[in-house]
Image: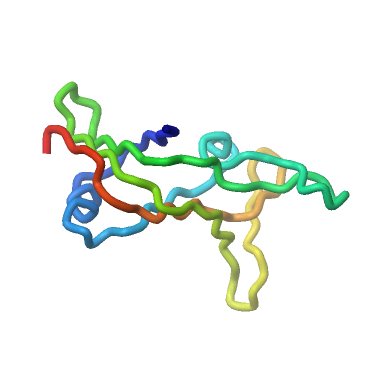
Length: 118
């Protein structure tokens, strides 16, 4: 099983536990993109494309203490969501002289697999 490990604030961990939070969002930036996405050649002759890395579950941690709360939850689906403006255009930003599309990962959360110190 492929597991994505993420830090999360306690209030959001509690919302996942109560069933009120059914999606997790993470901004995709150049320094973390390898964690969330992979590049592939779709074979259309237009170069590389991106898709979400496949994760079966997410392990959430709250804090860094030895006895920190932990939650493992099923990932039902993952998608890349590109941020657009009111006119429907992609929003871009620049980092270190390169232009990037503003995007985030959206993980649909499923059943709770395990919990610890909660």
